[in-house]
Amino acid sequence: MGASEDTNASGPVSWASKKIFTTGEAAEVCKVSQQTIIRCFDSGRLSGFRVPGSKFRRIPREELIRFMRDNEIPTTALEGGRTRVLIVDDEPEIVSIMTEVLERDGRFDVRSASTGYDAGMLTESFKPNVIILDYLLPDINGNVVCRRIRERSDMASTRIICVSGVVKHEEIDGLMRSGMDEFIKKPFDVDHLVLRIATLAGITSASRAG
Image (cartoon, rainbow, N blue to C red):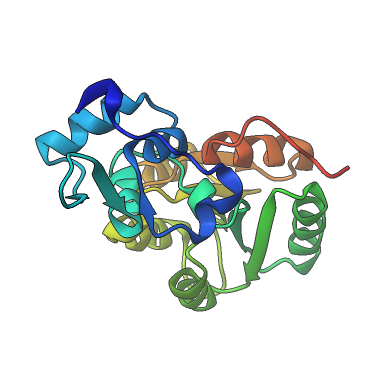
């Protein structure tokens, strides 16, 4: 309908519980123009319905999430405001340090696993936005974990950072082919890791708790 389309955005505080979005609200969440959302709606790339007796478009929450994931738009704003990070590493000291730093930052909801099996279970329930994955786990290697995640359409927007102390260039190439987004060599600077997590998750404007 163009510029006359309603735009009553209620602000990011309410995104986590909102079930139906106007095109203006969807545009604000996706950080694109309202006209872009309208064009996607009218072309069928973004599904929804029109308000009876009007031309106003409405977009269900689950459809907006699907659209955002398909277009690699971070869904953090719709999912409670904090980025979900899953740490998969069998070294308790490393897990402890990363968990402490990320939780103190204030922007992250953190879970951890020490095996590939536990990581798979947590991936199902936690739906992480970012996975920090040790290349060599007790029961599986990083290539397999990456491939399994990339085979899932509902995890298309999940970012994977692999970490390892001993790894060959060909192994890193294999991880990239398997779906890894970035490789960081151990030992690493924790602040740098936090920056890379935030960048990959699309939350580069920091609001760190200190």
